Amino acid sequence: TSSYGIQEALLALGIKPINQGASTGSNWFANGQVIESYSPADGKLIATVKAATVQDYDAAVAKAQEAFKVWRNMPAPKRGEIIRQFGEALRKHKESLGKLVSYEMGKSLQEGYGEVQEMIDICDFALGQSRQLYGLTMHSERPGHRMYEQYHPIGVVGIISAFNFPVAVWSWNTALAWVCGDVCVWKPSEKTPLTAIACQNIIQEVFKNNDIPEGVSCLVIGDAEIGKALANDKRVPLVSATGSTRMGISVAEAVAKRLGKSLLELGGNNAIIITPSADLKMVVPGAVFGAVGTCGQRCTSTRRLIVHEAIYDKVKDALVSAYSQLRIGNPLDSNNHVGPLMDKDAVATYLNALKVAETEGCKVVVAGGVLDNMESDCYVKPAIFEAKNEYNIVQTETFAPILYLIKYSGDVQNAIDLQNNVPQGLSSAIMTNNLREAEAFLAATGSDCGIANVNIGTSGAEIGGAFGGEKETGGGRESGSDAWKVYMRRQTNTINYSDSLPLAQGIKFDF
Ligand code: NAD
View 1 (cartoon, protein in one colour):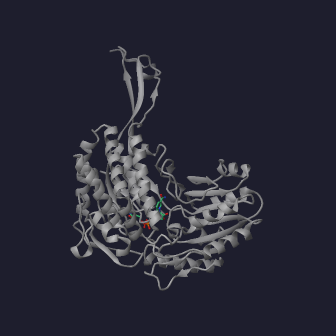
View 2: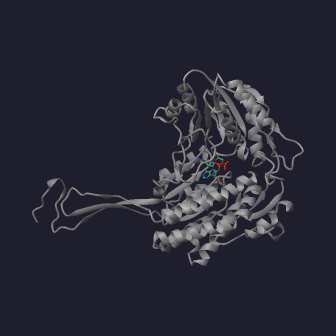
View 3: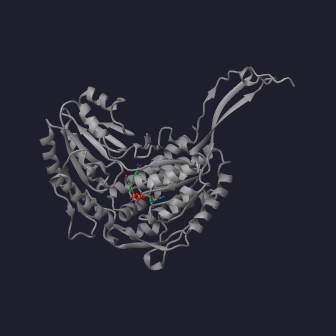
Protein backbone atom coordinates (compact mmCIF):
# COMPACT_ATOMS: atom_id res chain seq x y z
CA THR A 1 0.00 0.00 0.00
CA SER A 2 2.86 2.37 0.69
CA SER A 3 3.64 2.74 -3.01
CA TYR A 4 0.16 4.10 -3.61
CA GLY A 5 0.27 6.53 -0.68
CA ILE A 6 -2.61 4.94 1.22
CA GLN A 7 -1.17 5.53 4.70
CA GLU A 8 -0.68 9.20 3.86
CA ALA A 9 -4.25 9.41 2.58
CA LEU A 10 -5.61 7.82 5.79
CA LEU A 11 -3.66 10.26 7.93
CA ALA A 12 -4.80 13.24 5.85
CA LEU A 13 -8.40 12.13 6.37
CA GLY A 14 -8.03 11.71 10.14
CA ILE A 15 -8.28 7.91 10.23
CA LYS A 16 -6.20 6.00 12.79
CA PRO A 17 -3.71 3.43 11.55
CA ILE A 18 -4.52 -0.16 12.59
CA ASN A 19 -2.01 -0.40 15.42
CA GLN A 20 -3.61 2.56 17.21
CA GLY A 21 -6.97 0.91 17.86
CA ALA A 22 -10.41 1.38 16.43
CA SER A 23 -11.11 4.76 14.90
CA THR A 24 -13.64 7.13 16.38
CA GLY A 25 -14.14 10.67 15.13
CA SER A 26 -16.03 13.91 15.44
CA ASN A 27 -19.72 13.65 16.12
CA TRP A 28 -19.89 10.02 15.55
CA PHE A 29 -21.72 7.62 17.78
CA ALA A 30 -19.74 4.46 18.36
CA ASN A 31 -19.91 2.25 21.43
CA GLY A 32 -20.62 -1.01 19.66
CA GLN A 33 -18.65 -3.81 18.11
CA VAL A 34 -15.44 -3.33 16.16
CA ILE A 35 -15.73 -3.62 12.36
CA GLU A 36 -12.65 -4.48 10.34
CA SER A 37 -12.33 -2.94 6.92
CA TYR A 38 -10.35 -4.99 4.39
CA SER A 39 -9.33 -3.78 0.95
CA PRO A 40 -10.45 -5.94 -1.97
CA ALA A 41 -7.44 -4.55 -3.88
CA ASP A 42 -4.83 -6.42 -1.84
CA GLY A 43 -6.84 -8.27 0.81
CA LYS A 44 -5.17 -6.35 3.64
CA LEU A 45 -6.81 -5.00 6.78
CA ILE A 46 -6.91 -1.20 6.35
CA ALA A 47 -8.19 -0.11 9.76
CA THR A 48 -10.76 -0.96 12.39
CA VAL A 49 -13.80 1.05 13.29
CA LYS A 50 -16.23 1.10 16.19
CA ALA A 51 -19.82 0.63 15.14
CA ALA A 52 -22.91 2.17 16.75
CA THR A 53 -25.27 0.48 19.17
CA VAL A 54 -29.03 1.06 19.02
CA GLN A 55 -28.57 3.45 21.98
CA ASP A 56 -25.95 5.34 19.97
CA TYR A 57 -28.42 5.54 17.12
CA ASP A 58 -31.06 7.04 19.44
CA ALA A 59 -28.58 9.60 20.71
CA ALA A 60 -27.62 10.56 17.16
CA VAL A 61 -31.21 11.28 16.17
CA ALA A 62 -31.78 13.27 19.36
CA LYS A 63 -28.69 15.34 18.61
CA ALA A 64 -29.84 15.87 15.02
CA GLN A 65 -33.23 17.09 16.27
CA GLU A 66 -31.55 19.66 18.53
CA ALA A 67 -29.35 20.87 15.65
CA PHE A 68 -32.42 21.19 13.41
CA LYS A 69 -33.81 23.92 15.70
CA VAL A 70 -30.77 26.06 14.88
CA TRP A 71 -30.10 25.07 11.26
CA ARG A 72 -33.65 25.62 9.98
CA ASN A 73 -33.50 29.24 11.14
CA MET A 74 -30.42 30.05 9.13
CA PRO A 75 -31.36 31.68 5.79
CA ALA A 76 -31.05 29.20 2.92
CA PRO A 77 -28.34 31.19 1.02
CA LYS A 78 -26.30 31.23 4.26
CA ARG A 79 -26.65 27.47 4.45
CA GLY A 80 -25.55 27.45 0.81
CA GLU A 81 -22.36 29.25 1.84
CA ILE A 82 -21.57 26.37 4.24
CA ILE A 83 -22.08 23.92 1.38
CA ARG A 84 -19.78 26.03 -0.80
CA GLN A 85 -17.10 25.66 1.86
CA PHE A 86 -17.80 21.93 2.00
CA GLY A 87 -17.14 21.79 -1.76
CA GLU A 88 -13.87 23.66 -1.25
CA ALA A 89 -12.83 21.20 1.49
CA LEU A 90 -13.61 18.33 -0.88
CA ARG A 91 -11.45 19.91 -3.58
CA LYS A 92 -8.63 20.02 -1.05
CA HIS A 93 -9.14 16.36 -0.07
CA LYS A 94 -9.98 15.04 -3.54
CA GLU A 95 -6.81 13.08 -3.94
CA SER A 96 -6.77 11.38 -0.55
CA LEU A 97 -10.51 10.69 -0.47
CA GLY A 98 -10.55 9.41 -4.07
CA LYS A 99 -7.66 7.12 -3.26
CA LEU A 100 -9.35 5.77 -0.16
CA VAL A 101 -12.58 5.14 -2.11
CA SER A 102 -10.55 3.18 -4.65
CA TYR A 103 -8.67 1.22 -2.00
CA GLU A 104 -11.57 0.44 0.35
CA MET A 105 -14.18 -0.29 -2.33
CA GLY A 106 -12.01 -1.51 -5.21
CA LYS A 107 -13.10 0.78 -8.05
CA SER A 108 -10.38 2.21 -10.27
CA LEU A 109 -8.50 5.26 -9.02
CA GLN A 110 -9.95 7.34 -11.85
CA GLU A 111 -13.44 6.33 -10.78
CA GLY A 112 -12.56 7.09 -7.16
CA TYR A 113 -11.54 10.63 -8.13
CA GLY A 114 -14.64 10.83 -10.33
CA GLU A 115 -16.81 10.00 -7.35
CA VAL A 116 -15.29 12.82 -5.29
CA GLN A 117 -15.73 15.15 -8.28
CA GLU A 118 -19.45 14.31 -8.24
CA MET A 119 -19.53 15.39 -4.61
CA ILE A 120 -17.91 18.69 -5.54
CA ASP A 121 -20.36 19.17 -8.41
CA ILE A 122 -23.42 18.59 -6.23
CA CYS A 123 -22.08 21.16 -3.74
CA ASP A 124 -21.90 23.72 -6.56
CA PHE A 125 -25.39 22.74 -7.67
CA ALA A 126 -26.78 22.94 -4.12
CA LEU A 127 -25.19 26.36 -3.58
CA GLY A 128 -27.14 27.71 -6.56
CA GLN A 129 -30.25 25.86 -5.42
CA SER A 130 -30.07 27.57 -2.04
CA ARG A 131 -31.33 30.76 -3.72
CA GLN A 132 -33.96 28.94 -5.77
CA LEU A 133 -36.20 27.07 -3.33
CA TYR A 134 -39.16 28.42 -5.26
CA GLY A 135 -42.86 27.99 -4.68
CA LEU A 136 -45.63 29.26 -6.96
CA THR A 137 -48.11 32.06 -6.40
CA MET A 138 -51.73 31.60 -7.44
CA HIS A 139 -54.59 33.98 -8.15
CA SER A 140 -57.29 33.43 -5.56
CA GLU A 141 -60.93 33.05 -6.66
CA ARG A 142 -61.92 35.24 -3.72
CA PRO A 143 -61.62 39.07 -3.81
CA GLY A 144 -58.99 40.59 -1.54
CA HIS A 145 -57.18 37.30 -1.16
CA ARG A 146 -53.74 36.16 -2.12
CA MET A 147 -52.44 32.59 -2.40
CA TYR A 148 -49.01 31.16 -2.57
CA GLU A 149 -47.06 28.09 -1.60
CA GLN A 150 -43.78 27.76 0.21
CA TYR A 151 -41.34 25.02 1.01
CA HIS A 152 -40.09 24.50 4.56
CA PRO A 153 -37.37 22.19 5.92
CA ILE A 154 -38.74 18.73 6.69
CA GLY A 155 -36.50 17.75 9.64
CA VAL A 156 -34.21 14.77 10.14
CA VAL A 157 -33.32 12.98 6.90
CA GLY A 158 -32.09 9.40 7.27
CA ILE A 159 -29.63 8.22 4.62
CA ILE A 160 -28.90 4.53 4.04
CA SER A 161 -26.22 4.02 1.40
CA ALA A 162 -24.68 1.12 -0.56
CA PHE A 163 -21.03 0.09 -0.80
CA ASN A 164 -20.57 0.81 -4.49
CA PHE A 165 -20.85 4.59 -4.31
CA PRO A 166 -19.68 4.91 -0.73
CA VAL A 167 -19.39 8.71 -0.67
CA ALA A 168 -21.20 10.29 -3.67
CA VAL A 169 -24.68 9.05 -2.76
CA TRP A 170 -24.35 10.54 0.71
CA SER A 171 -23.40 13.93 -0.74
CA TRP A 172 -26.18 13.86 -3.35
CA ASN A 173 -28.58 13.66 -0.44
CA THR A 174 -26.86 15.83 2.13
CA ALA A 175 -25.88 18.77 -0.08
CA LEU A 176 -29.50 19.30 -1.08
CA ALA A 177 -31.01 18.35 2.29
CA TRP A 178 -28.73 20.83 4.05
CA VAL A 179 -29.52 23.81 1.81
CA CYS A 180 -33.19 22.88 2.29
CA GLY A 181 -32.65 23.30 6.05
CA ASP A 182 -32.70 19.64 7.05
CA VAL A 183 -30.25 17.72 9.21
CA CYS A 184 -28.93 14.28 8.25
CA VAL A 185 -28.27 10.95 9.96
CA TRP A 186 -26.16 8.68 7.77
CA LYS A 187 -25.90 4.92 7.94
CA PRO A 188 -23.26 4.00 5.36
CA SER A 189 -22.64 0.48 4.09
CA GLU A 190 -20.88 -1.59 6.75
CA LYS A 191 -18.52 -2.65 3.93
CA THR A 192 -17.11 0.86 3.50
CA PRO A 193 -16.95 2.50 6.95
CA LEU A 194 -13.63 4.30 6.46
CA THR A 195 -14.69 6.48 3.56
CA ALA A 196 -17.74 7.43 5.63
CA ILE A 197 -15.59 8.50 8.56
CA ALA A 198 -13.41 10.51 6.19
CA CYS A 199 -16.48 12.38 4.89
CA GLN A 200 -17.70 13.03 8.42
CA ASN A 201 -14.32 14.43 9.43
CA ILE A 202 -14.29 16.76 6.41
CA ILE A 203 -17.78 18.18 7.01
CA GLN A 204 -17.27 18.53 10.78
CA GLU A 205 -14.19 20.66 10.18
CA VAL A 206 -16.29 22.97 8.00
CA PHE A 207 -19.02 23.13 10.66
CA LYS A 208 -16.50 23.87 13.40
CA ASN A 209 -15.01 26.77 11.45
CA ASN A 210 -18.49 28.27 11.11
CA ASP A 211 -19.97 27.49 14.57
CA ILE A 212 -22.56 25.18 13.08
CA PRO A 213 -23.95 22.52 15.45
CA GLU A 214 -22.32 19.12 14.94
CA GLY A 215 -25.72 17.40 14.84
CA VAL A 216 -26.42 18.78 11.34
CA SER A 217 -24.41 15.76 10.16
CA CYS A 218 -24.58 12.56 12.23
CA LEU A 219 -22.87 9.29 11.37
CA VAL A 220 -23.99 5.90 12.67
CA ILE A 221 -21.98 2.96 11.44
CA GLY A 222 -23.63 -0.43 11.61
CA ASP A 223 -25.39 -3.15 9.67
CA ALA A 224 -29.00 -3.62 8.60
CA GLU A 225 -30.18 -3.37 12.25
CA ILE A 226 -29.32 0.34 12.31
CA GLY A 227 -30.94 0.75 8.89
CA LYS A 228 -34.11 -0.84 10.25
CA ALA A 229 -34.07 1.45 13.27
CA LEU A 230 -33.98 4.45 10.89
CA ALA A 231 -36.79 3.05 8.76
CA ASN A 232 -39.01 2.54 11.82
CA ASP A 233 -38.21 5.84 13.54
CA LYS A 234 -41.08 8.35 13.65
CA ARG A 235 -38.58 11.12 14.35
CA VAL A 236 -37.23 10.66 10.80
CA PRO A 237 -39.78 12.06 8.32
CA LEU A 238 -37.75 11.12 5.23
CA VAL A 239 -35.59 8.04 4.65
CA SER A 240 -33.44 8.00 1.53
CA ALA A 241 -32.25 4.44 0.89
CA THR A 242 -29.86 3.23 -1.81
CA GLY A 243 -29.18 -0.46 -2.29
CA SER A 244 -30.76 -3.72 -3.35
CA THR A 245 -34.45 -4.07 -4.16
CA ARG A 246 -34.78 -6.50 -1.23
CA MET A 247 -33.53 -3.83 1.17
CA GLY A 248 -35.76 -1.20 -0.49
CA ILE A 249 -38.91 -3.26 0.00
CA SER A 250 -38.10 -3.75 3.68
CA VAL A 251 -37.42 -0.03 4.19
CA ALA A 252 -40.48 1.04 2.15
CA GLU A 253 -42.78 -1.19 4.22
CA ALA A 254 -41.48 0.11 7.53
CA VAL A 255 -41.58 3.77 6.47
CA ALA A 256 -45.06 3.44 4.90
CA LYS A 257 -46.42 1.82 8.05
CA ARG A 258 -45.70 5.03 9.95
CA LEU A 259 -46.72 7.19 6.94
CA GLY A 260 -43.25 8.62 6.51
CA LYS A 261 -41.68 9.45 3.16
CA SER A 262 -39.10 7.27 1.47
CA LEU A 263 -36.79 7.99 -1.45
CA LEU A 264 -35.68 4.68 -2.94
CA GLU A 265 -32.72 4.16 -5.29
CA LEU A 266 -32.56 0.41 -5.91
CA GLY A 267 -31.28 -2.14 -8.39
CA GLY A 268 -31.08 -1.82 -12.16
CA ASN A 269 -30.97 -4.19 -15.14
CA ASN A 270 -29.80 -1.82 -17.80
CA ALA A 271 -29.73 -2.49 -21.51
CA ILE A 272 -28.28 -0.88 -24.62
CA ILE A 273 -30.22 -1.40 -27.82
CA ILE A 274 -27.94 -1.52 -30.85
CA THR A 275 -29.73 -0.96 -34.14
CA PRO A 276 -28.39 -1.55 -37.68
CA SER A 277 -27.50 2.13 -38.14
CA ALA A 278 -25.45 2.36 -34.92
CA ASP A 279 -21.92 3.73 -35.13
CA LEU A 280 -19.89 0.70 -34.03
CA LYS A 281 -16.91 2.74 -32.96
CA MET A 282 -19.17 4.30 -30.31
CA VAL A 283 -20.92 1.06 -29.42
CA VAL A 284 -17.87 -0.85 -28.25
CA PRO A 285 -16.40 1.60 -25.73
CA GLY A 286 -19.91 2.46 -24.46
CA ALA A 287 -20.88 -1.16 -23.96
CA VAL A 288 -17.55 -2.35 -22.56
CA PHE A 289 -17.16 0.52 -20.10
CA GLY A 290 -20.79 0.05 -19.05
CA ALA A 291 -20.33 -3.67 -18.46
CA VAL A 292 -16.92 -3.85 -16.81
CA GLY A 293 -16.51 -0.39 -15.20
CA THR A 294 -16.46 -0.65 -11.37
CA CYS A 295 -16.26 -4.40 -12.11
CA GLY A 296 -19.96 -4.41 -13.01
CA GLN A 297 -20.92 -2.99 -9.60
CA ARG A 298 -22.75 0.15 -10.64
CA CYS A 299 -26.51 0.42 -10.38
CA THR A 300 -26.29 1.72 -13.97
CA SER A 301 -23.89 -1.01 -15.23
CA THR A 302 -24.77 -2.37 -18.66
CA ARG A 303 -26.10 -5.91 -18.14
CA ARG A 304 -27.87 -6.56 -21.47
CA LEU A 305 -27.06 -5.71 -25.08
CA ILE A 306 -30.05 -6.04 -27.38
CA VAL A 307 -28.53 -6.25 -30.84
CA HIS A 308 -30.19 -6.37 -34.26
CA GLU A 309 -29.53 -9.62 -36.12
CA ALA A 310 -28.05 -7.75 -39.10
CA ILE A 311 -25.05 -6.57 -37.06
CA TYR A 312 -25.11 -9.14 -34.27
CA ASP A 313 -22.01 -11.12 -35.31
CA LYS A 314 -20.02 -7.97 -35.97
CA VAL A 315 -20.84 -6.59 -32.51
CA LYS A 316 -20.08 -9.92 -30.87
CA ASP A 317 -16.67 -10.18 -32.54
CA ALA A 318 -15.78 -6.59 -31.62
CA LEU A 319 -16.69 -7.28 -27.98
CA VAL A 320 -14.65 -10.47 -27.84
CA SER A 321 -11.68 -8.58 -29.20
CA ALA A 322 -12.14 -5.70 -26.72
CA TYR A 323 -12.53 -8.08 -23.75
CA SER A 324 -9.30 -9.86 -24.68
CA GLN A 325 -7.48 -6.56 -24.24
CA LEU A 326 -8.89 -5.72 -20.78
CA ARG A 327 -6.27 -5.28 -18.09
CA ILE A 328 -7.48 -6.57 -14.74
CA GLY A 329 -5.55 -5.74 -11.60
CA ASN A 330 -4.96 -3.39 -8.70
CA PRO A 331 -7.40 -0.50 -9.10
CA LEU A 332 -4.84 1.99 -7.75
CA ASP A 333 -2.65 1.25 -10.76
CA SER A 334 -4.11 3.46 -13.49
CA ASN A 335 -2.89 1.09 -16.21
CA ASN A 336 -5.66 -1.32 -15.22
CA HIS A 337 -9.20 -1.13 -16.60
CA VAL A 338 -10.92 -3.49 -14.14
CA GLY A 339 -10.43 -3.88 -10.40
CA PRO A 340 -11.75 -6.51 -7.99
CA LEU A 341 -15.25 -7.32 -6.77
CA MET A 342 -16.13 -5.92 -3.33
CA ASP A 343 -15.53 -9.07 -1.26
CA LYS A 344 -15.64 -12.86 -1.23
CA ASP A 345 -19.44 -12.89 -0.92
CA ALA A 346 -19.63 -10.90 -4.15
CA VAL A 347 -17.30 -13.40 -5.82
CA ALA A 348 -19.51 -16.29 -4.65
CA THR A 349 -22.62 -14.57 -6.05
CA TYR A 350 -20.81 -13.99 -9.35
CA LEU A 351 -19.68 -17.63 -9.61
CA ASN A 352 -23.15 -18.87 -8.81
CA ALA A 353 -24.63 -16.65 -11.55
CA LEU A 354 -22.18 -18.08 -14.10
CA LYS A 355 -23.35 -21.56 -13.19
CA VAL A 356 -27.05 -20.74 -13.25
CA ALA A 357 -26.63 -18.96 -16.60
CA GLU A 358 -25.22 -22.08 -18.20
CA THR A 359 -27.88 -24.37 -16.72
CA GLU A 360 -30.59 -22.06 -18.00
CA GLY A 361 -29.22 -22.27 -21.54
CA CYS A 362 -26.91 -19.27 -21.89
CA LYS A 363 -24.02 -19.82 -24.34
CA VAL A 364 -20.54 -18.73 -23.30
CA VAL A 365 -19.02 -16.03 -25.53
CA VAL A 366 -16.28 -14.88 -23.14
CA ALA A 367 -15.73 -17.25 -20.21
CA GLY A 368 -15.77 -15.93 -16.64
CA GLY A 369 -14.05 -17.24 -13.53
CA VAL A 370 -11.84 -16.19 -10.65
CA LEU A 371 -8.31 -15.05 -11.48
CA ASP A 372 -5.49 -16.82 -9.65
CA ASN A 373 -2.25 -15.30 -8.42
CA MET A 374 -3.72 -11.85 -7.91
CA GLU A 375 -3.22 -9.58 -4.89
CA SER A 376 -6.54 -10.75 -3.40
CA ASP A 377 -9.18 -13.44 -4.07
CA CYS A 378 -11.65 -10.88 -5.40
CA TYR A 379 -10.43 -10.48 -8.99
CA VAL A 380 -12.69 -12.06 -11.61
CA LYS A 381 -12.89 -12.22 -15.39
CA PRO A 382 -15.66 -10.19 -17.05
CA ALA A 383 -17.93 -12.65 -18.85
CA ILE A 384 -20.23 -12.50 -21.88
CA PHE A 385 -23.12 -14.86 -22.59
CA GLU A 386 -25.57 -15.22 -25.43
CA ALA A 387 -28.96 -15.37 -23.77
CA LYS A 388 -32.70 -15.01 -24.03
CA ASN A 389 -34.26 -12.05 -22.27
CA GLU A 390 -36.80 -14.22 -20.47
CA TYR A 391 -34.21 -16.37 -18.65
CA ASN A 392 -34.48 -15.92 -14.88
CA ILE A 393 -30.80 -15.08 -14.60
CA VAL A 394 -31.17 -12.32 -17.20
CA GLN A 395 -34.16 -10.93 -15.31
CA THR A 396 -32.05 -10.70 -12.14
CA GLU A 397 -29.50 -8.03 -11.27
CA THR A 398 -26.22 -9.85 -10.57
CA PHE A 399 -23.85 -7.21 -9.20
CA ALA A 400 -20.82 -8.36 -11.23
CA PRO A 401 -19.33 -8.03 -14.73
CA ILE A 402 -21.64 -10.38 -16.63
CA LEU A 403 -23.01 -9.17 -19.95
CA TYR A 404 -25.88 -10.88 -21.82
CA LEU A 405 -26.14 -10.60 -25.61
CA ILE A 406 -29.72 -10.77 -26.84
CA LYS A 407 -30.59 -10.85 -30.53
CA TYR A 408 -33.62 -9.05 -31.97
CA SER A 409 -35.05 -8.91 -35.45
CA GLY A 410 -37.43 -6.61 -37.30
CA ASP A 411 -38.59 -3.27 -35.97
CA VAL A 412 -36.96 -1.29 -33.12
CA GLN A 413 -40.18 -1.70 -31.12
CA ASN A 414 -39.28 -5.38 -30.70
CA ALA A 415 -36.02 -4.33 -29.07
CA ILE A 416 -37.77 -1.75 -26.86
CA ASP A 417 -40.27 -4.39 -25.70
CA LEU A 418 -37.39 -6.71 -24.76
CA GLN A 419 -35.58 -3.92 -22.95
CA ASN A 420 -38.70 -3.05 -20.94
CA ASN A 421 -39.49 -6.66 -20.13
CA VAL A 422 -37.56 -6.88 -16.84
CA PRO A 423 -38.68 -5.99 -13.30
CA GLN A 424 -36.21 -3.09 -12.95
CA GLY A 425 -36.34 0.35 -14.61
CA LEU A 426 -33.22 2.40 -13.95
CA SER A 427 -31.07 3.19 -17.01
CA SER A 428 -31.41 2.45 -20.72
CA ALA A 429 -29.78 3.45 -23.99
CA ILE A 430 -30.11 3.17 -27.74
CA MET A 431 -27.28 3.36 -30.24
CA THR A 432 -28.68 4.53 -33.55
CA ASN A 433 -28.28 7.13 -36.27
CA ASN A 434 -31.92 6.78 -37.24
CA LEU A 435 -34.08 9.62 -35.95
CA ARG A 436 -37.26 7.56 -36.02
CA GLU A 437 -35.68 4.84 -33.91
CA ALA A 438 -34.29 7.35 -31.42
CA GLU A 439 -37.65 9.09 -31.04
CA ALA A 440 -39.51 5.77 -30.76
CA PHE A 441 -37.17 4.88 -27.88
CA LEU A 442 -37.93 8.17 -26.10
CA ALA A 443 -41.71 8.15 -26.74
CA ALA A 444 -44.40 7.15 -24.25
CA THR A 445 -44.29 3.69 -25.82
CA GLY A 446 -40.48 3.68 -25.60
CA SER A 447 -38.12 3.01 -22.71
CA ASP A 448 -39.85 2.69 -19.33
CA CYS A 449 -36.71 3.63 -17.38
CA GLY A 450 -35.91 6.72 -15.30
CA ILE A 451 -32.89 7.33 -17.54
CA ALA A 452 -33.03 6.93 -21.34
CA ASN A 453 -29.97 7.86 -23.41
CA VAL A 454 -29.29 8.14 -27.12
CA ASN A 455 -25.82 7.32 -28.40
CA ILE A 456 -24.28 7.16 -24.95
CA GLY A 457 -24.18 4.12 -22.67
CA THR A 458 -26.26 3.35 -19.57
CA SER A 459 -23.52 3.87 -17.04
CA GLY A 460 -23.22 6.96 -14.86
CA ALA A 461 -25.15 10.22 -14.97
CA GLU A 462 -24.59 13.94 -14.65
CA ILE A 463 -25.65 15.50 -11.37
CA GLY A 464 -27.72 18.18 -13.17
CA GLY A 465 -30.54 15.79 -14.03
CA ALA A 466 -32.81 13.94 -11.60
CA PHE A 467 -31.39 10.48 -10.97
CA GLY A 468 -33.45 7.36 -10.31
CA GLY A 469 -35.68 4.73 -11.86
CA GLU A 470 -39.07 3.09 -12.04
CA LYS A 471 -40.58 -0.28 -11.10
CA GLU A 472 -38.30 -2.30 -8.80
CA THR A 473 -35.73 0.50 -8.91
CA GLY A 474 -38.04 2.22 -6.42
CA GLY A 475 -39.27 5.42 -8.10
CA GLY A 476 -37.10 7.89 -6.15
CA ARG A 477 -35.27 10.82 -7.73
CA GLU A 478 -32.27 12.58 -6.28
CA SER A 479 -29.57 15.01 -7.36
CA GLY A 480 -30.49 17.62 -10.01
CA SER A 481 -33.61 19.15 -11.60
CA ASP A 482 -36.32 19.58 -8.94
CA ALA A 483 -35.26 16.60 -6.82
CA TRP A 484 -34.73 19.07 -3.93
CA LYS A 485 -38.49 19.19 -3.35
CA VAL A 486 -38.53 15.78 -1.67
CA TYR A 487 -36.36 17.20 1.13
CA MET A 488 -38.95 19.85 2.03
CA ARG A 489 -42.52 20.02 3.22
CA ARG A 490 -44.89 22.01 1.05
CA GLN A 491 -47.34 24.51 2.47
CA THR A 492 -50.16 26.36 0.75
CA ASN A 493 -50.94 29.77 2.22
CA THR A 494 -54.03 31.92 1.73
CA ILE A 495 -54.02 35.50 2.99
CA ASN A 496 -57.17 37.58 3.25
CA TYR A 497 -56.32 41.28 3.09
CA SER A 498 -59.94 42.45 2.68
CA ASP A 499 -62.29 43.46 5.49
CA SER A 500 -64.75 40.62 5.01
CA LEU A 501 -64.66 36.87 5.28
CA PRO A 502 -66.53 35.30 2.33
CA LEU A 503 -67.14 31.64 3.17
CA ALA A 504 -66.66 28.93 0.65
CA GLN A 505 -69.58 27.69 -1.51
CA GLY A 506 -71.55 30.87 -0.73
CA ILE A 507 -72.37 29.65 2.80
CA LYS A 508 -73.58 32.39 5.13
CA PHE A 509 -73.57 32.47 8.92
CA ASP A 510 -75.85 35.15 10.45
CA PHE A 511 -73.69 36.27 13.35
P1 NAD B 1 -27.60 -3.74 0.14
O1 NAD B 1 -29.07 -3.65 -0.11
O2 NAD B 1 -27.04 -5.03 0.59
O3 NAD B 1 -27.18 -2.67 1.26
C1 NAD B 1 -27.43 -1.29 1.08
C2 NAD B 1 -27.57 -0.63 2.43
O4 NAD B 1 -28.78 -1.04 3.06
C3 NAD B 1 -26.45 -0.98 3.42
O5 NAD B 1 -26.12 0.18 4.15
C4 NAD B 1 -27.11 -2.03 4.31
O6 NAD B 1 -26.55 -2.11 5.59
C5 NAD B 1 -28.54 -1.53 4.37
N1 NAD B 1 -29.56 -2.54 4.62
C6 NAD B 1 -29.60 -3.83 4.22
N2 NAD B 1 -30.76 -4.41 4.57
C7 NAD B 1 -31.49 -3.46 5.21
C8 NAD B 1 -32.79 -3.45 5.81
N3 NAD B 1 -33.58 -4.53 5.80
N4 NAD B 1 -33.23 -2.31 6.36
C9 NAD B 1 -32.46 -1.19 6.34
N5 NAD B 1 -31.22 -1.15 5.82
C10 NAD B 1 -30.74 -2.28 5.26
O7 NAD B 1 -26.89 -3.23 -1.20
P2 NAD B 1 -25.33 -3.20 -1.57
O8 NAD B 1 -24.86 -4.57 -1.84
O9 NAD B 1 -24.59 -2.37 -0.58
O10 NAD B 1 -25.38 -2.35 -2.92
C11 NAD B 1 -25.68 -2.88 -4.18
C12 NAD B 1 -27.10 -2.57 -4.59
O11 NAD B 1 -27.35 -1.17 -4.53
C13 NAD B 1 -27.38 -2.95 -6.03
O12 NAD B 1 -28.64 -3.54 -6.10
C14 NAD B 1 -27.36 -1.62 -6.76
O13 NAD B 1 -28.08 -1.60 -7.97
C15 NAD B 1 -27.96 -0.73 -5.74
N6 NAD B 1 -27.63 0.67 -5.98
C16 NAD B 1 -28.59 1.49 -6.50
C17 NAD B 1 -28.32 2.83 -6.79
C18 NAD B 1 -29.35 3.72 -7.38
O14 NAD B 1 -29.16 4.93 -7.32
N7 NAD B 1 -30.44 3.24 -7.92
C19 NAD B 1 -27.04 3.33 -6.52
C20 NAD B 1 -26.08 2.48 -5.97
C21 NAD B 1 -26.40 1.15 -5.71
